[in-house]
Length: 238
Image (cartoon, rainbow, N blue to C red; front, side, top):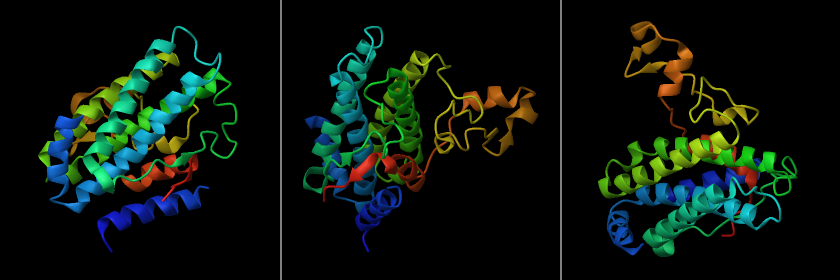
């Protein structure tokens, strides 16, 4: 079984269980060298499809996003749509199609496009998950440094999105311990880690666990991310 098949099967099981040209040329060349890179790119593309559609629909919903927040939503939407275009261009015919999304997650968030607080909460969930998702694939892209470079460029922008959305919700721009702030705990599990490079920084530096946890973000694996995103994917369209 190819790694691409592994990726597709993983996403199918998760869904079933949960109910620019210049860069593109470099990416295409590297993609041809290893199928594992395609897996990571399609994984990122699936998440970018989700984020782009979420912001597009949120902006299209009448009287949902207040004028104070709307410029940030508009800018983030531009970024997410650009990420989709880049990844699709890089993958060419190997790109997975855009899934059909259900942003209510089967009714759990039924007012996502009529209640701004619910909408902000999901925006934070998607952005905080996206940041950890990109970080979780860094080691899988070390054999393809050109793609790793682009992935890190996207990752830092996703982190800026996350911080802005968190500010909109009246929260810190960073994560303290594994505080989920009412969101699914799986998004934040592991963020309470205080050991970096084998060193317990609370013991070594004498500062609080909360402050150490805020200074470092932890990665999420592909299966963990799909477990979080799966409820929002209605069908894969393939």
